[in-house]
Picture 1 (cartoon, rainbow, N blue to C red):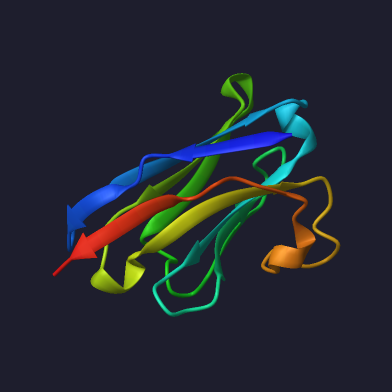
Picture 2 (picture 1 turned 60 degrees about the horizontal axis):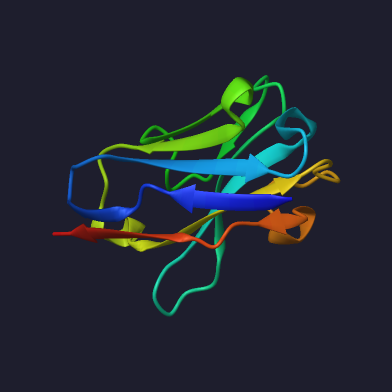
Length: 124
């Protein structure tokens, strides 16, 4: 399984970006997908997750109401729509995939495959 994240960039506070994550090598709809981020000098943290059938979506409190996770199984792609961005959202964003959350979608140890990350920088 390979994951390729894209869509990062530099944006002013209040702006929007949409990240994409393409999965290849296996059937996309076998996997739940997650987005994590790691800011400068910070540990990696959970952002959002979505089940294979899009029935359940989960968000961290810090992004709830501003970010939306989605997926298109026909395109083997997961998305993270980020609106009303803040400087504290600046981070490298990585997508991840797993067949089973094992009870905890917000832990990075629950995921088996990771993309390389895409940089998001929000200026004030």
